[in-house]
Image 1 (cartoon, protein in one colour):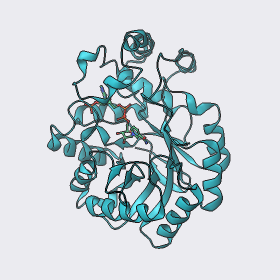
Image 2: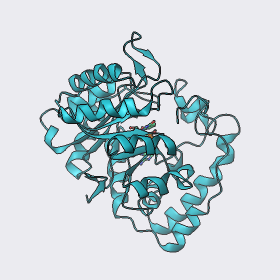
Image 3: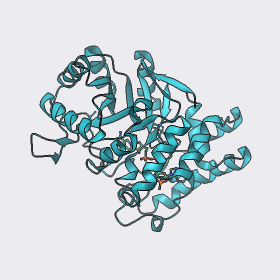
Image 4: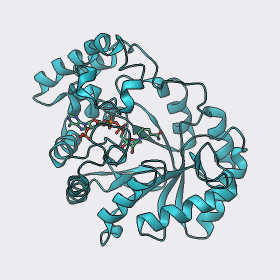
Length: 323
Ligand SMILES: NC(=O)c1ccc[n+]([C@@H]2O[C@H](COP(=O)([O-])OP(=O)(O)OC[C@H]3O[C@@H](n4cnc5c(N)ncnc54)[C@H](OP(=O)(O)O)[C@@H]3O)[C@@H](O)[C@H]2O)c1
């Protein structure tokens, strides 16, 4: 597996999203042994960039990743996130990027992950109640102390990114980007490129939709977050299947799977874009890893790029997301 650079951090061309092993999606937490085998297989294949967050579970996903990387910490570029749990307020789910909360959150993440340093520490969502300068100032202090190596943001808007970068170099922005989520292309991608910030594409398989494996809500458990997601709920899922059909057409031509085509399209958007597909199964990890070697033709890329946007927002309620 090739390496690429996110700002000044070298990472594998594809990462592994660990969230669904423990939270939000069907089967989360059902087979931790297979999840751990999946992480081990990722490391064996050179997908060493692992993504977790304290809110996943909460806490259980970091514990799982910590168990999986025990004895192999040096092989891993370890990324986690803070800011969706407020420890000073009793551990409730709330945006909190105050310096005091960051310190408490980091100590917990280090303990659960069984390490003394996080390679890439992201603010998970912008906290409207805390100036980004205060947040990045606190993170810069943690870099000085050697507890984190790089600073990241997630889902931040242009102004926040510029203000953050003025305090300390930001290594990566993690936001949703895939064939059915093209939002970052208008303003955010040009901006991070101008500033030398890397881009980590989360949900690169469209939360599984682009693989063709989700064709009706009955494919999802009752507790699955996607049942509340406007792109999956109601009539939207059936209407959005036309997107999968176009991906499947290219997949047949290319002798690949639809998921591989979705990842190869993202990889073709630039070496500064690192997708982190999520899976908790070894076989799918192997399938996704092979996308790093899939070259689509210019014609295939432009047909994929011309797919019309989906029906439905990315989240049930877009308004509270701090920008
Ligand atoms: N910063 C943020 O706010 C944010 C938000 C969401 C996610 N993330 C991060 O991004 C990572 C990836 O995003 P995601 O997990 O939301 O979505 P994703 O990677 O687009 O898709 C994951 C889904 O696709 C399924 N899948 C994976 N490979 C497959 C294959 N080859 N064939 C068929 N199905 C396949 C997975 O099921 P199985 O697991 O059962 O294989 C899972 O349901 C997460 O793990 C998390 O670390 C960050």
